Length: 269
Image 1 (cartoon, rainbow, N blue to C red):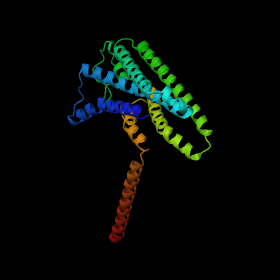
Image 2: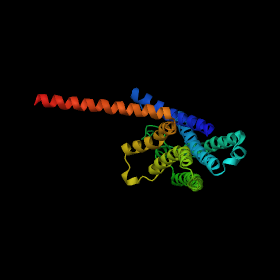
Image 3: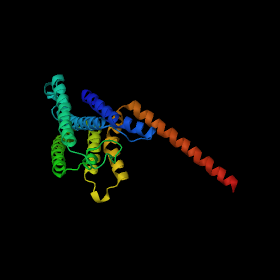
Image 4: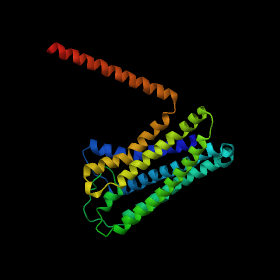
């Protein structure tokens, strides 16, 4: 599990580093310029990292299934070599997916200006600049991506159906807690990634606006990689205690501030 978490952390760090530093620099320097080559590299890297992350989450679902449903065979089915091979398959599949989509997008001629209505190079916004009939390319892009994502989703769903069936047969409540504490962070991360991606893809075109597009882009590109480490870190008891202490101190300070404000208001009247 920790080997896969290491890979997930690297993918999250890479995804954030691909788009956030450039957008922050553009904001500080009051510019939105990006070269054609930089845009292509940004698209390919972001697709590569996010696709690999989704494939890795699918692999992690299988890892949890073997650990809970077939614990005696875990060392045989998921040895160090098997884990390395599965992680490499996730990275390789993400790379292939990114290369195909990047080549498909940047082989189009662009003649409708050079302004991308987004804070980073996003494929749907880039396709709007194409002067050719990009409907078939866009449809093929959407269908292939949806088919692949749905296949991974079904695999994750079936894995968790088997996991929950196995957990419910465990007589000890303490073992329930241990099994669910192992699976719930992964399930939360998967739900976050899938829900933000689906919400962005299924947004009605009639409600499209530049500001809404930016919000949705932040929702699926920045929020999951930023929250994933926090979700998994909540298993750490020391972090829980520190967070609880921070919230308690913040609540106490807010209460004192409100009381002092109320007393000052009474004195003024």
